[in-house]
Image (tube, rainbow, N blue to C red; front, side):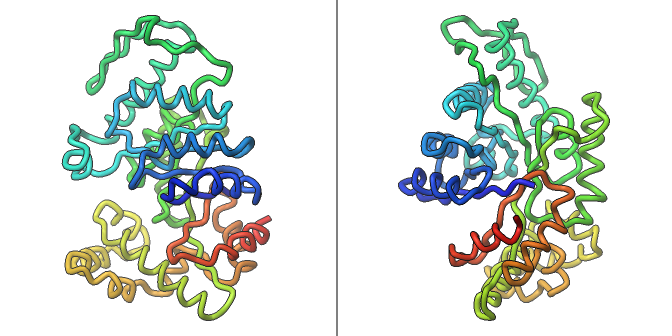
Length: 335
């Protein structure tokens, strides 16, 4: 299991932050899409490093087209000398329609077609095949030499997809090279829902297992060197778990554990803006199901035991603005 790190939204700190992450021994660097364009920040990170992988976790797929994603991914693969990973997610309907002014449609089917279309474009560039992709959502049939990048030795980047529900997870197994596990997942949910869905997708692609397929994603870690630090970490993690649990799309994770009735109660509190009160509904049992809790050495061992047999790479999910000095201790404990 590789241990990655995530860059902050501070654009000015990106080059130094990426260089520090690589120097500290992390295997990969991820950039999410929230307040800034993730591809520009990924380019900065690639230019500041030489060995760590760099990727988007995630870029919002439905805010773009297969052609725009193809250009971005192909160029970043070359800029990074093969270290770039194109991580994509769907976002939810209100954001796609009201924030990006794009069309919403069944997300799993659309994502499947978007990835296949992007790969068809890459194949046209890399292998000089005729571009003739026709689907229900996307059509790409025009590519002239003037607009086609030259083939390069690194080729197209791997594609990871993010998801929670079975439909999107199955699509990832079929058309992607890896899957981002949402942090709001448990070992039981992974074993009973996520892995079977990925295997069904792999079977559609003619593959019998998950060999060569990456399973990645941030892991809740609740770490403290003192009682005060641990108390702050516990509250921060419970608050974040409550936030995710209030979202109807994630109710399936709670249902696996028999906690589904908690979701509407949390949703009601969120609508009233009672964010701190939501954390009070997250019991210690729920906390320990979603997160590994304790001192750095305890959490290091616990994370390996919980995730090491499933994840191929993970990152620490900081939900309480921990002292940065905690993370090297945790990384050493995992090693």
